Length: 225
Image 1: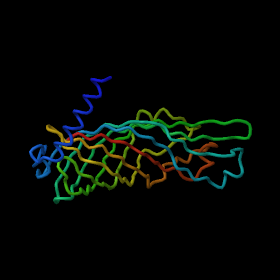
Image 2: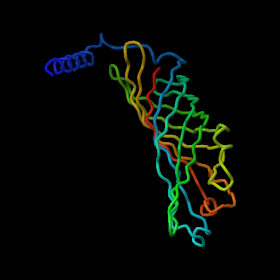
Image 3: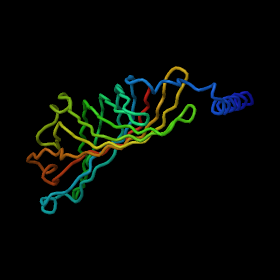
Image 4: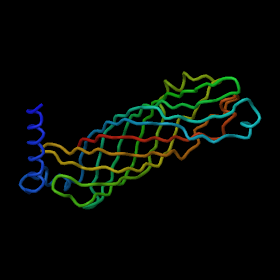
C-alpha cells in the first residue's frame, strides 16, 4: 500500500512538472497537419423515443415506452484541419445496438427488442479551444447517416415490431484532447438524436399502437489519433 501511494504521488508530481514546463510539450506540431487519421472505440446507451397513435386508446395496450440498453461501436477517424480552431471530421463507424419498447397490457407486459447493426458516417465540425500545454477542450457537432446491415433485419417477423433501415441523426458532443508522447487521446461524450420516423407500419398491435419511433443514443468515445 505504501509503495502504491508513492507511485501515485510520483505520477502526480511528474504530471504537474510537465504541465508547467514547456519542454515537456508533447506533439507540439501535431495539429498543424492538414490531414491525420485515427480510430475510435465507443460504448453507448441507446433507446427509442416513441409517440402513440390514435389506435393506442382503442386497443388493449396500457402503455408503450422505450428503455435504454447498452451497445458499442468501432470506427475510423479522418480529420481535416480547416483553421487553428476548426476541424472537419469524417468518422465511418459500425454501431451495434439493442433497443427495447416495453408494452404493458391489462393482464401482462411484453418487451419488443430490436437488435441492429448500423454502418454510420458522421460528418462533424469540431471547434477546439486554445491548447494549454498537453490538453485542450473541444465541442463537436454535425449530421450522421446510418444504414442498417441486412442480417438482423431479415430475422424480424411481420408480427413483431419492426423499424426501417435508414436513419439520419443530429449529433452533438464535448471532449478533451490529451497529447501523449506518441499519440493524441481524446475521451468524448456525444448525444445523438434521430430525425426520422423509423417505425415500420405493420398490421400488428405493436406497430398500430405507435405513430413514431426515433432513435436516441448517449455514447462515450475513446479516440486515438
